[in-house]
Length: 321
Image (cartoon, rainbow, N blue to C red; front, side, top):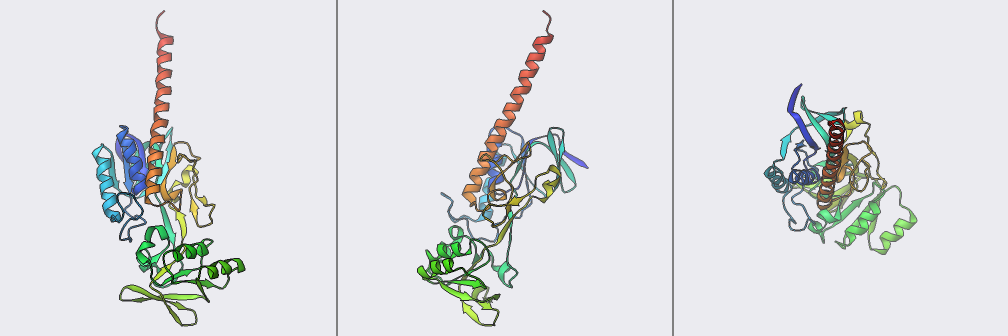
């Protein structure tokens, strides 16, 4: 295999979203050799804008990432396109396989994000991120006062309906086959109508959601649809390190567990962003990346200090009396 940068990098960041780029920015500003490997498939690519990000509300996701890449490069960091195929331990470091090449690293920062697994309902995937939504804070303002339908399908579906009711007086909950008395009471108290029965498809007219077609063939007019996807961490390539996703405490998907600094159970590996915090928005993901980057730098400083002290002591012990 071709070896990229024979001397290796201090840190390889796997994932080029907000978490990865902010982590790389902190490391590059600390004069660490760092490379970001970006597969080019950001989760929020379909969205028209990033919202709730102070100073950048409404910025296009692609524009935000382009600015981030330029900032990392401005401090000497590298950002390359590629897909990581596997990671193995080599001594105290790592070998990262990228599109048939091998890149060496002393530390890893995993910021690969997650995949939204959507219900198998015709029309759902094509409209996701447009007028099929999941987060009231990311896209709720954009559908305010519209006719909104919330589809049951996860442990947080009723909670979603209550949150979107804050944004519109016209919210319907498509309950499927089951709805507890307690949840029915909550929905009724907030004026949220309940539509029983299964959902067959979404009605799309002129490239927009126009309604929800039920299993009996009837159509309920809606302008936006809310869904609760299962959110699954992108981390299959880390199995050789013994690092595997586990079920998130919310029951909404899987994640890589870390401590508060982003450190995983595998020595030398940190994680940040949606791969570990499945509900984090862009701002929170960026902040977590910054925290992890700073912690990785501190860990490297501690290691280098220990090595220097050991060298100093050995030199002193071997010096002539």
